[in-house]
Image (cartoon, rainbow, N blue to C red; front, side, top):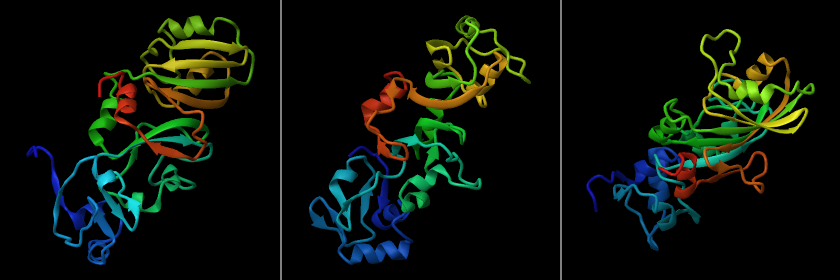
Length: 249
């Protein structure tokens, strides 16, 4: 085994995954409820290599092990009315995940944010390096939004967005060029290559209109699956992670 693969005590691993305190997971292990490679693993001090395949090799109380620390990457279909925050009041996006996942170390964080009144594709991970690679301004990972507007457009919006000269209120640097696909006079799709605060809403305000409904359906080359309902989530495969990053995970 490569020395670059980290190891961890079994009891610490389960505690870091939120299965309980160190004392609680020791009792879990000693009670024969942890199965590793088809055998009962009852030694809390056993050191394990922390690799993705642990989810298929280990079970806890009859259920597959949660993704190991630093290896969890999720897509979630964020519903309206839910906030991307650990601390704000009201329903938080983390409440949509299993309760024990909120005790994980390292913590699960959203990859960027969608505001409370925006729905759609949201990525979540406990891999800080991956998170920063996706949101890095240098990467310009594209994000696509489906936009519904309050009033019919004038007809020059696509040209103005593509020009890379549109200024947002209170800012001194113009937006990068934005791609726009017109569906109707009040419905469009736009692709952004940067992530400014409330950018879609603010740029249509700068164009003299108002966004009534906003939904994100793509990040990089990853689409929100049609069969993933609002509030639901699932893990991403290596190929899907690579798609987010443009094919280079």
